[in-house]
Amino acid sequence: NALNAAIAGASTLALAAVSFNALAAQSITVGHTTSDNSHYSIGVDAFKEKLEELSGGEFTVEEHPSGALGGERDMIEGLQIGTLDAVVTSTGPLGNFVPETYVLDLPFLFKDYDQARCVLDGEVGQDLLAKIGEHDLVGLAWSENGFRHMTNSQRQIKTPEDAAGLKVRTMENEMHMAAFREMDVHPTPMAFPEVFTALQQGTVDGQENPIPVILTSNLWEVQDYLSLTGHVYSPAIMLASPILWEGLSEEEQGWFIEAAQAGAAATRAEVSRLETEGLAELKEKGMTVVEDIDKSLFQEAVEPSYKGYTDQYGSEMLDRIRNND
Ligand code: PAF
Image 1 (spheres, helix red, strand yellow):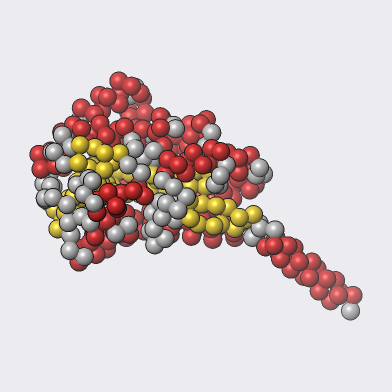
Image 2 (spheres, rainbow, N blue to C red):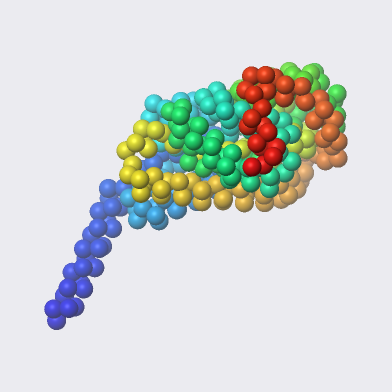
């Protein structure tokens, strides 16, 4: 009858609309430097699922892991010129573009995951996302890399004196480099895609990264010693290209933000899981792990690097984080 025919007609139209969307789906290129089984990759999977769901297939996501599109600094530049759409990156190179974010890279600023997540999800995090927006980049959501620990090929590090004299790869981040100099470590800034080979060939003795990175980037293959220094919390962030952003409607922008938040939640859950399970795996793989670290010794050693920060950038942001507004 007429009603059935109308219903059949409407569902054919709806199906046609869905398949048209699928055919016309805009592919979003997302890059990151960690492997395709890493905490970042799990976050990109969740981002993809959410974005496809919210947009009814209008957008799809193509992930490029393992630094296939370059190091984090290269990819951030790529966002600015529109050669890729989105990136999951640590804050390592971000301060070179948005100096206001340097505050997050100060050693021993956050005492634990709860505090760091709370600050990044609160007003400070929102204000920093807005600042990022003033520098030809779009900050979608804060995600997570994790607390960084030192690894090296030479010896067990229990005190700052044990680390002195080592050549350690750091991120291209002046706060991190300044802190290591205070420990008489020789910081060697380097993009992450070069790190495995540099460690393997002995160009540097060590590096520092969170457990999920040490595990999934196979750094345990070329580093015998891991010290749980937890010397700095390493935030991650999902950034988008302003060129992509300007072409989106307000509703579409909302989908991207919601999807990035879903990605960040999945990444944080994986970081939490690997803090214990990943550490056990690294021990099984043969790393000698120094767990009993008197962090106050490291904290004292790097304390002068705070003066370098406040001299240059003032203390407002630092105070806000410490007061956890
Ligand atoms: O060491 C780094 O450069 C970063 O921690 C990494 C591994 C690229 C993840 O953001």
